[in-house]
Amino acid sequence: MARVYNFSAGPSALPEAVLKQASAEMLDWRGSGMSVMEMSHRGKHFSTIATELEADLRALMGIPDNYKVLFLQGGATGQFSFIPLNLLQGKTKACYVNTGAWSVKASGDAAKYCEVILSANSESSKFTTIPDLNAWQLDSEAAYLHYTANETIHGVEFQEVPNVGGLPLICDMSSNILSRQIDVSKFGLIYAGTQKNMGPAGVTVVIVREDLLGKADPSLPDVFNYVVQAKNDSMLNTPATYNWYLVGLVLKWLQGEGGIAAIEQKNIHKATTLYKAIDSSSLYTNPVNVNYRSRMNIPFVLKDAELDKVFLQDAEKQGFMELKGHRSVGGMRASIYNAMPIEGVQALIDFMAEFERTH
Ligand SMILES: Cc1ncc(COP(=O)(O)O)c(C=O)c1O
Image 1 (tube, rainbow, N blue to C red):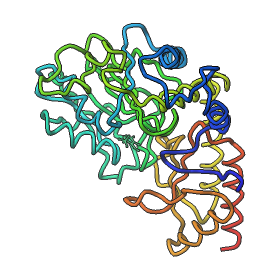
Image 2: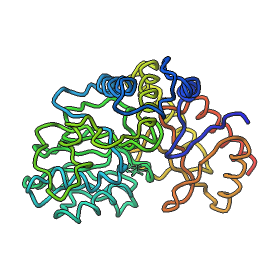
Image 3: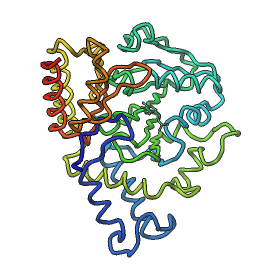
Image 4: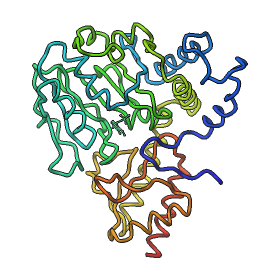
């Protein structure tokens, strides 16, 4: 079967070149005579993979030297708890901004460890916008402010990094990391699961400013303690070795594409083209405030929900997969991460136009 266009929100489509390289290197990585899966994480071959992985991520994102880069397990969901346990540092409060399902989960977990100050909340809009920064309630005694850069389910994305004064800024970038240029030095901590723009599921990247470290809650297991993991190069225990390797291949692919600046231009083009098609149709609508529409996850509903099922069936027949919206919001969602080529977006638009014409 030919490869389909996969619009899954994550795990999601990977660059075909990466899959082919992994396949070519499956039995023998760079003349080592073994698969990466079979290597000791303490051996010289894997050590090369690990060193290149961190160096490539630092180069691509311009990560300053005073930041640690960790490759952990436990998913972004684990970080919802590990962040307060590592970063409260004796403080009793943290600020959270709820702009969709993922930030609601993050603030919900944080409430187990501290008083959560809800600095802003767009629930009354059904998470279709981002509250004006001037109206955010900031508490200078809070340990940090947490927000979600891109709400994967609701399709809402911050277009700028919010300026929250002196509070360390903590950001869940799971679904838009590496998709747009950002100034890492504005953040206290950035985290992301890898299963959207970085590779397969199974690795969680944490980029954390060193001055925030050192006073973790004593109950925190060492394996999730940023200081302990940094001292051990994220290998306190056996890491997800093959997944690290695949993330490394994706980073090298991205370098070959011209890096983040170049992929950002492609992402703008893909998203603009799809939104334009939705906005000019009389069958499809996207409910999100135009100023905060996501470039990565584009939800849309059909005017007549009765057509949902046949839309999805027809789409699948023609090789457009995983377009069903998240069960909590319904409708459709096209996730168009870095690995989705413009041809895939254009083919989807053509399919949608033809479906509208015939229905
Ligand atoms: C923005 C965001 N945060 C957190 C998560 C949770 O990630 P994980 O499943 O890796 O815990 C997801 C998953 O889709 C997400 O999209």
